Image (cartoon, rainbow, N blue to C red):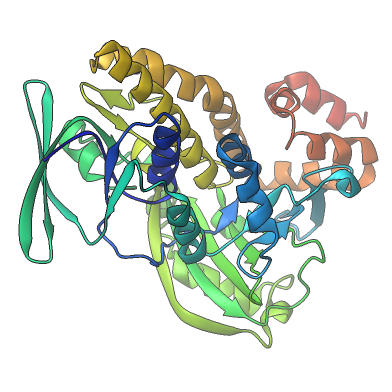
Length: 413
């Protein structure tokens, strides 16, 4: 069996690639090792970039999400809590009355990924679930993928293979096999808690920058079913250097932190505390080559500061489909062609944000600096509005790299 394109992984990156390939009427096969609905360890936050990409495909998708608050809870902002315990509410939009729906959502990955799979156009996409990839080989100009399903071993060839299979991607391992870089990798754990109190009325996500987790944070993200996604993340290099046990630190914060413990007094853990790795986009890498492309976590595109990866995964799938369409027309599947038509537009769109987030990640390890910024923002409405606008305007966010910005803050302007 031969297909022009094989996508490995049907998560957000894989579904995004499929949706936009279908728009171009390009037939393709998706191999997914699980069966839907299936869970995925994640923070469950869907940023404004998720909304942006899905609107490029079909604006109706966002309206369907917004009309189902049980599975897609609209979120209007973020609460930053400094190490000194002072909190700062930052709305994603200044005038929410003018918005038809929330700028972001929170949704369990079991629901969101199933929702995306339901959007696939089966006229062009053949989804094969419970397919475990055994091997990938490239012979001359053809990729050969061997996978197992229901006890049978099946071989399929393609011109282009798209790795959307997350951290420890089999596609990345075959074509690149980069070692894990602890300075560009984050460890995370996640759990679900019922009956957490004092949640924001506009469903703000909460990032608590506890001194024992810097550079990293403890989070509380409300969900529409009355539970909260609760977790902690920290740079792997710092976890190793300081011998931090993330599970212990998360439970300690829930039990002892004065700003957190009372809110969990009547809360109960649902299920297990689970961990996973986050390959960060804090370093530019080659994300394609001869006959292949990497998307989402397989391409290490997670935001270094917030840990958000779904929006970047969807964007990479969008650009992958564009590059594939051009490559098929040109009959050119070379590394140079994909570097120009895939790597370049991905980083033109995302690198400014990723680079800035890496700067913020490095700044966040300085507890006194974080406390200072939040204290200043409490006193200055102008600064609060500036930080809020930074969620909408990348040029404003870039002020964090400008020494003049810090000087004005220091002198109170």
